[in-house]
Amino acid sequence: MHKGFIFDLDGVIVDTAKFHYLAWRKLANNFGFDITEDQNEQLKGISRVKSLEIILEWGKVKLSQDEFMEQMALKNDNYLSYISSMTKKDLLPGVSNVIEYLSENNIPFALGSASKNARIILEKTGLIHKFGAVVDGNDVSKAKPNPEVFLIAASKIKIGPENCIVFEDSVAGIQAANTAKMISVGIGEKDILNEADFIFSDFTEIKIDFIKQIITNQI
Image (cartoon, rainbow, N blue to C red; front, top):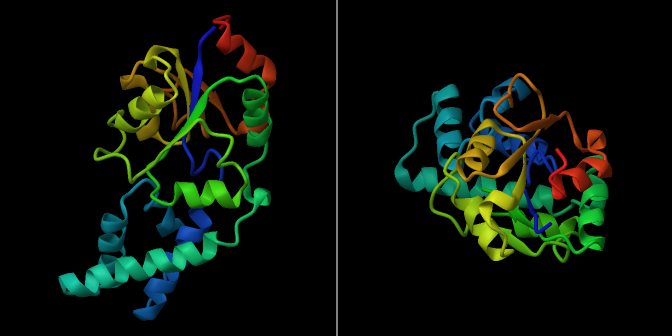
């Protein structure tokens, strides 16, 4: 009966992609070019450094190392200004139902995210006090598909990896959960997340019965 749950953040609990897009687009506009939403899709799951390199390549812009670091900081400042306006309304549909069920039934759960702004987002959306542990980009040295973030999260809620269930929306995240021998639940498209143990298009498809069954090893 001792199970624990680990949530990724972006694309699972909230969708901050729109804020990243606005911040990257503002940066590009400052250099005299634009980026489309399709181009922004290519930046998902990629580090801030690599994303900036790609965007500068698109705009054929060359920067010194100091200028590059300046632009990275500026992008993050702009992104933070956008997420500072987030509220509970920005939670993705259905996710709060699962979090409430776990919380009310004292089932341990943690956050395992690459985002360095995870704590701010959880505070803004009113969830920070619900999580037994928060492990984010400030706590890890290896990116997914390395399972480090999930293994740290599991240890913080004192649940063995084999008894953890991970909610993820990225291929790298699913691979990290699988490598850690955790149960992986993909949130997104079946043809993309086909390595996951279970796949739902979003949390509105996840019924509490599913959570109960996975806790009691009935599925």
